[in-house]
Amino acid sequence: MAIERTLAIIKPDAVKRGLAGEILSRIHAAKFQIVAIKSLRLTKSEAEGFYAVHRERPFFGELTDFMSSGKAVVMVLEADGAIAKWRDTMGATDPAKAAPGTIRRDLGTSIQYNCTHGSDAPQTAAFETGYFFSGLELI
Image (cartoon, rainbow, N blue to C red):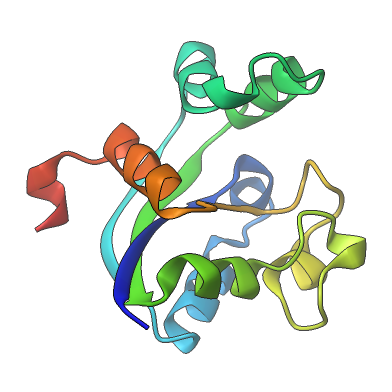
């Protein structure tokens, strides 16, 4: 495998429930390098821009309302095969269908409140990383 970077988000539901430390601990245990990290609160407009690919989907409004509802932690993770590795660490979108020991299975409460986001492909990772971090932040 090759060294990759991926975007990871600890979503507002997890931050509000005090789970950021637990999720960061799991990131370290999985041997990711955290290249960049920040805490922020997306505006509705910023959430709509980030999730623009889903604009025509019926859940778009609910998703962007949720993602702009509170603080989130965004980060760039680096590892061999980081995109797939982070998705495996998170687990399936639906916590009820996620593998035991994954973040979403252990900490998520629903498809919407599943604690984390991760890029799904190299092109997505490049867009998502650039959405939150400037080049200087990624050195």
